[in-house]
Length: 624
View 1 (tube, one colour):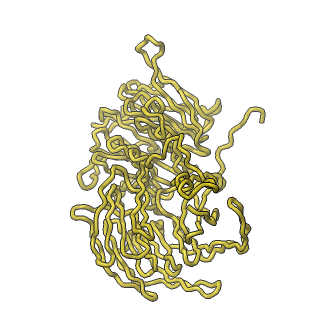
View 2: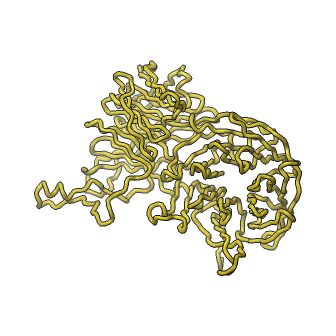
View 3: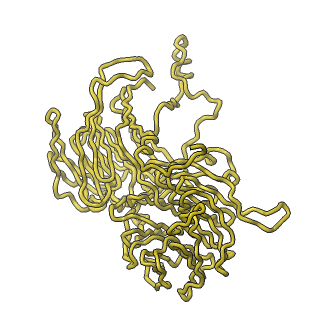
C-alpha cells in the first residue's frame, strides 16, 4: 500500500426517498420496503440485511400498502387504485389490475395465504382469491362511509378488522357483513378533534383488536362485545403504524414524532398466570415520522420520512452478542449510483429522473501525509441530462474515456455520444436502440471504451460494439437453461478478455469475451455477492460477500502505516499489515482509483440528507 492523493467529493446532492411501507416474510426471512417514489426493495435478513433485489420507481405509483402471500408472492396497492404483483425472478411487474374502488389505502393477506383483502377510498373492502397465476375478484364486503385505512385478519380467518375514520369495523368473512362498529374517541390531549384516523389495526387470536390512531392513542378492544378494554395515550401526535410478533406476546408502534414504542405481554405478578400489555421501551432512532414498522422474531424494524431503515435487535432474542446484536441503520441503496471516467476525471451521478456529469477539481499544491490541499481549479458541473416520462432510471454508466453515456429505464434504453470542444460539450443520441436492451439492471463499458456490456432483467448478457456515433450487436449470453436469474453485478478485466457476472443468488459466472463463451462458474457461496472486481495485472477475480469475512481479533495490530525505518526489509515487510483502516470519511457512496496514486471518494453526510427533508414535528420542551 502506498500513499494516495484523494478527491473527497461531497457535491453529489443525493436524497433517498422516504419509506412508506414495510412487510416482513417469516418463511423466507425477507423484508419488502416501498418508498414514496414507488421503488420497492427486498432485503435478505439472513444475509446480513443485504438489499438483494429492487423494483424501480414510477411517478404514478404512490404505494400505500405492501404484503406477502403464500409462495413468496409480493403484492402492493397504491393511490392509482391498482393492485400490483411483482415477479421476484425477472425483477419486473408481473401484472397490474384496477381494484375499482379508487385509491387503495390498505391490504392484508389471509392467514392461509390464499385470499387478499383490499381497503379502498370509496369505503369498500374487496376480497380476492389468489390463484397460481393471478388474483381473481371474489366479492365486496358491506361498504363503509369513509376510506378503509387499515386491515387485519383474525388468525382463524373467520373475521377481519378494518380501521376507518372515527370507527373500527369487524366483519364476518363468510357473510361479508359488519358485526360490530366501534366508535373511537376524538379526544386529543383533552381537546375534541374533528376526526380520528385509525392508521393501523391488529387482530389477535383471543379476539382483541389493537388500534393506533391520529389522536396519539393505542387502544385495546373486545371484538366480541365491541367495547374498549384499555387505552394508552403515548404521543402528542399520530401513531401511524403497528406490527405484532407471530407469538402475539409483543408488538411495536411508530409515531409521527419519530419515536418507536415496544409493548410486551407480561405477568401481572411473579406467580400469576394473568397477563397484561405493558409499554416497555421507547426508541428514538428517527428524526421524522415513522410511517411503517415490522416485527421479526429477533428485531424491531422501522422506517419513515427520514429515509432510514432501522433494525433494532431484541437483545433477549439474540444468542451471540456480536455484530448481529448491533443496531443497523440502512440509508443508501445497495447498488451503484455513480460511475467514473478515469481518463477525463469525470463523475456521472444518477438521480431518479436525471443524470449529472461533473469534472473533478484539481490542485497544483503539494503536502505531507494527512494535509488538505487547496484547489487550484474547482469542480465543474458539465451536464444535466433529464429523462422523459414517469419511469425512474434503473442504472447508468459513463465510459472510461468519457465519450459515452448509457442509461436505462423499464421501457427504454438510451445511449449518447459526447464530444468535447474546450469547455463545451455536445451530446448526440444514438437512435434505434434494440428493444432487448431495455430494463437493464447493470451497464458497464470495457476499459478501452469499445464495448458495452448490458445485463437485462431476463438474465441475458448483451455485448455491444461501439462505433463512431453508432453501435453493433456482437453477442448475447443466454441464462442457464431453466433459470431467469437476473444479473445484478458486472466486472470486466482491464485487458478486455474476461467478464464476470453475479446474479441474485450466490453464483458468479465468468465469460471469455474473445471467444464469446462461458468460461466457468465460481462455486456458489452461502451468502450473496455484494461486489466484484478483476485485478489488472493478474486477472484474479475478487468477490465480496454480505457476511463480511471476519477481521483478525481485537489484539491484532491492524494499522501500522509507518514500519520502523531502521530495520531490515524482511522485518519491515513482516510488521506491515494487509488491513489499513481509515475512519476519516463520512458515509461513502463510491470509491475508485483514478490512477495508481489517485483515489476518488464520494461522501454523503447523513446530516446533509436530513437538512433537505421537510421539518419534523416540533416538540414542546420543558420551560420553553
